[in-house]
Amino acid sequence: MTHAQAAERFTDDVDRTTWHDQALWFVRQKRDRAAHQLPEWEALRELASQIKDHTLSRLDDYLVEFETNAQRNGITVHWAADAAEHNQIVLDIIRQHNGQRIVKSKSMLTEECHLNPFLEQHGIDVVDTDLGERIIQFENEPPSHIVLPAIHLRKEDVGRIFHKHLGTPEGESDPQVLTEIARQHLRQKFVAADVAISGVNFAIAETGGFVVCTNEGNADMGVTLAPVHIACMGLEKLLPQLDHLGVFTRLLARSATGQPITTYTSHFHKPRPGQALHVVIVDNGRTEQLGRPDFRSSLKCIRCGACMNTCPVYRRSGGHSYDYTVPGPIGSILSPNVDLKKHSTLPFASTLCGSCSVVWPVKIDIHILLYKWRQIVGQQNAL
Image 1 (cartoon, rainbow, N blue to C red):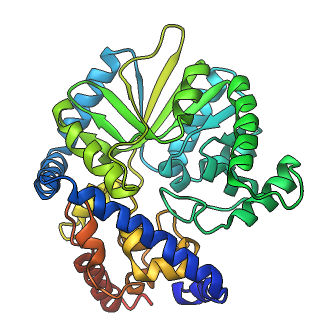
Image 2: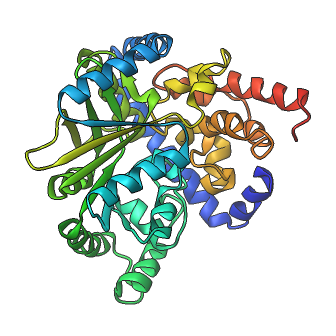
């Protein structure tokens, strides 16, 4: 099914299309206000872009430096060439520690690798603890947005899902009531967990540590209570020095949700006493993208979702129409590198208006890259 065909299903519901568009544009406006409050905003974007360019130019060196320092700190580092190897490594770690009950905070990498269904096939119970992720997990749906995974659902939809899976009163859709019920439900899962899995927002080569950013505190709750912490990261998440981190944390939350900073910015440098800490570093096509001079800049992405919030096509077609883990403009650049034939229509899911390039915090010309992919699709007759 092409993007246009999938999008038609979304746009058939005119009311949903309208509020989805308006909700995401509201987030875009919050981003603009937050950016305008910083006189140095454009200087931060330029510096972040330069840091990422430099890191990618010496990525192998910084990966080795990160591994060396992480191991010195007592962290066990694993390397995965692809999704299958990543999933097997995670399963092996869980089995090594006799784990059965897993709590997982938001991680687009584990979504990319389809970790949840893999673990469930092997008898492992996995609970997504980000509220949006938990809502869609109940319905066996993928996220429709990398920051706002359930943005395609109305509060009435969430009430129906909670009634079905948690036994809430039929018709209950008050967000405060539903959130409290979710808190109580997830608290039980946190307390019972054997293993906590998290993503990684930034990893620091200089220290061997990494940072996880959340607004709900679910990552902290999971890794504090569970005796085993597995952090899964794409190899592009590296920053050379700890001093660089402040540049990116100032950009990330403002670009994603219009906040000055995420509610929780948690640093991990070594395992707590009595805890095991594992980091799984994943390639899964990233070095191939790195080897494409025209497209390596896409690896600078910090997964803020700003390009989705501003894209007129994404806002009106929904994330599921892209049929890829990362939807929107950035997904339309990344997905053809994974499977050109399957995702050949995605570079055309854009007006090439350039709005995504304007808001991208690390200054990537997304609309130019989309145009280049269109040329490749045409040259290879991939449609």
